[in-house]
Length: 225
Ligand SMILES: Nc1ncnc2c1ncn2[C@@H]1O[C@H](COP(=O)(O)OP(=O)(O)O)[C@@H](O)[C@H]1O
Ligand SMILES: Nc1ccn([C@@H]2O[C@H](COP(=O)(O)OP(=O)(O)O)[C@@H](O)[C@H]2O)c(=O)n1
Image 1: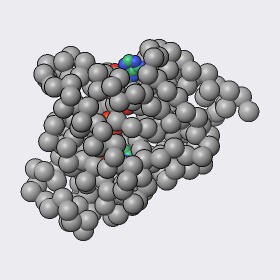
Image 2: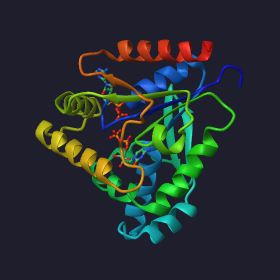
Image 3: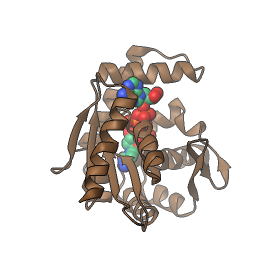
Image 4: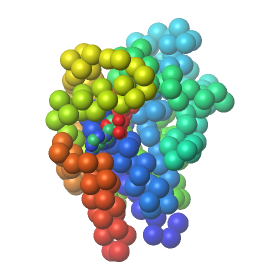
């Protein structure tokens, strides 16, 4: 693709990665890939299939027999599991509390990385997750490590839940986010970690538009090179 580059956005939970990735991709005409949604999809199917989530082999086998599709929908992305739209289900509390455990397994990560690399081939891409700049697409032209204070991130998730009609406890959300960040950062394979050549963007006191504009500016500079 002419001028297409790869933009990798990593960072902790609820930092705004998906929101910004979506906007940047739309603006630049790139493909947007939410890798967290892929791990969530596998976790959802594992829960529904009663699979042992401590077994790397069982999860790997399940993933080989699962079709996960990310398709553009209303400016966002729908997640289809074996042809069924599960976009809301993969955001459930049950999936959220099990996804880091599922994502820590060797075979699961190996298969997911293969899928993610294939999705990024031959097109301008904005991919967000935890290990995009470090493991999935280490040659990305632009790497962003997006963060915000944990209080701000919990507040954002709280407001997001309210909008979806889900009433949650702010302190519980904060604890869940801290636990998930810890699990994601401490796992052995591709832990959540800023790549050496990533640009740190602390969004704590920035609006969505400010963050999106900053990334678009950085991307345009990279494309001019
Ligand atoms: N800079 C920002 N300022 C305020 N709210 C934001 C900002 N970025 C994202 N949000 C909101 O925070 C919530 C979490 O964002 P999301 O993109 O899902 O984060 P992540 O993909 O990092 O988990 C969403 O409701 C989103 O609208
Ligand atoms: N590239 C990625 C993306 C997500 N994940 C895992 O998937 C979980 C859910 O990711 P997500 O991006 O949907 O999480 P939120 O920050 O949106 O809640 C993370 O907490 C990680 O455990 C991962 O291990 N590697």
